[in-house]
View 1 (cartoon, rainbow, N blue to C red):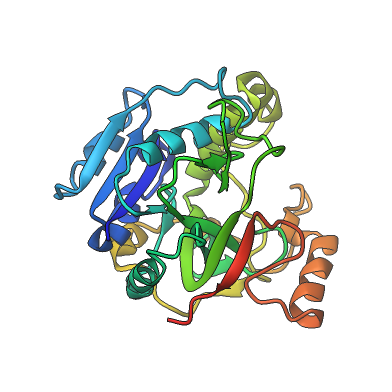
View 2 (cartoon, rainbow, N blue to C red):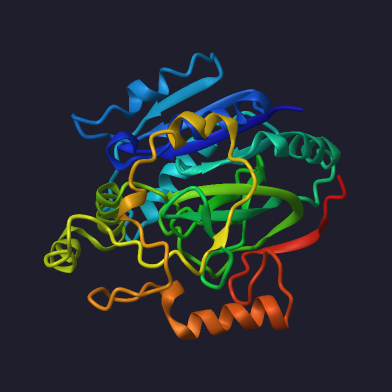
Length: 320
């Protein structure tokens, strides 16, 4: 059995992505790690950062982003597919540049991959999520933040990245262009794993967070839209209130420790529940979403799932 890891990335250095820690978090269990490295800005050091990883498992593919050919965020899916198609493993583990897997979950992943290797009815694995926000002690456990996603897939050519690299679907006779197509596509049959993806996409110094949001919105909506949308916004992102968020009491991945040590923006965060009246409320601060979260967690007793988004067919839960 062989396992490949893969990702896509561009300007990770400038946008404060922990790309090195992400790759290293699963490097022990993969036979190779494929990176679709986009055309970074001249002052970005992403390639240099990746090459500090001393491993012969790394395979870098140089790419050029084209958001005209792949608009509305589909370039993310296109770049993901470029990396996927270069993978040689039986199973492929996908991590975005701000996602890590704690080392304590690696044995479970290895066992599951081995257990279902010859069960071709299983097309992938569904992992749970921890979405950290603002700092490394707070995370979202409520409506609007996907609690599960497909991050391990079987190496099948018909399986492609989906939408804006949010997930994966089986797309027969794919034209290689429309990653948002629904008609004629199929949800993957997956096994639910008792393992988490730790997502740090919303843990950045406020000025980096604002820059990252602009870059993300540019890929999805275009430079003209971003220029107007951010014209009157501050240079630093306001995280809003953290007082109602869940507190993380476990450990973070070992590969992220040096990255966490750089945390120095706590004095800019609002650890209370008092909303800033001069700034639009974030989704988690709005009453309707807090009520939705209460219903899902306290009334329906949901854990690691929510009503609505569901891009897979769960066959069973891995008992290991």
